[in-house]
Length: 443
Ligand code: AMP
Ligand code: SF4
Image 1 (cartoon, rainbow, N blue to C red):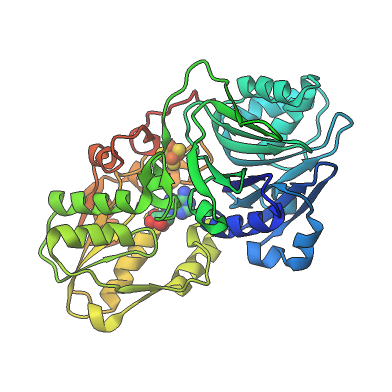
Image 2 (cartoon, protein in one colour):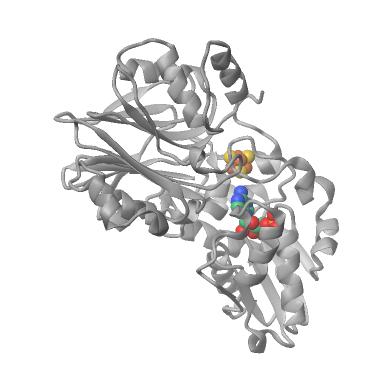
């Protein structure tokens, strides 16, 4: 999931359209844009890709120089009702909200709100935030949001748009990324900095963990630190898998991070082989790093059909299975008779890696040595990253040798946690799905 916001930058709908395009890799299930011209809020949303939902006519109807946008992938609940931004009409002032992340105390909050009379239309935590804002009966929106921020716990980066303000909030542990950019005297806020390039904005800074930034006409952005305690625990999977290689997250370039992971893997788990390849797209940087360090030639041995979305993101197992076969194809003449080092970003259930190893072997590979750019993942994520329920996590059931046998690889090595930290310049990271150390309370 991903959010994108524009404050006082000319045609906000058009900029959001391009911004969301650059963030499309973070979710293909649905997308939406809400704008304001200072008088009205306008919203358009739908299920599908940015290019499918929006056209010039629709963008023209979204008037104004401020906007928020969202791309969604579904881990819980599909349907257009769950597509953000949500737009709420209220006599104290309309507002719109777009959220990336997940609250850990959402069940408790929703139950309490329902007991007080709230009725929910979606299964998104963004709706809980909106209800909380209104339930506390504080008229001033800034104060109302501040109050909500003391009630919610979890991993979130959300944007709220009113007729005259844009609010950007990031959770106390900074689990979800959120960055601020500048453009022609206005501001852009985005989950990943690659969206700044798409709209000609320049990076200013990250929103800090436990910070709310308020953008208001005629004033510099105002910062409010709302958390008693904050820490830097950004989701490591952002760097490992989610983010685009051209993004800089918490001061770390994603491509460089992944390349470093590959280099460390080459040092820690060398093997005699003829070529190195990575599973596209997220493991290409790692494979380049491994090849550079080991001296084994890098080859593009797997071709990805770019017109199919990320397999994991499609909801059903049946669709996922179809997706993988359509999505990747081996370059047979390169692979036949060769000893291959295969870099992959992570193993979650193990099904993707097993299929790829089989695909390479059936294309004639003599040996396939798998190198994974993060540690084994035996713990589930409670922060909205769809890493599956515990019983589906292959590393919760099997040790490394067990996984090696299951994926039918000739050897298997995972990057140890300390090297993951090193690759990220020791920036604070959440590593809970690897080590079980969750940075928040769990309910
Ligand atoms: P599998 O082991 O079959 O569950 O698939 C693992 C692959 O899915 C990894 O190599 C990643 O490319 C991708 N992946 C990892 N985590 C996620 C996630 N949270 N959402 C979507 N895809 C993911
Ligand atoms: Fe990311 Fe794993 Fe932490 Fe979830 S548990 S936020 S996937 S690092």
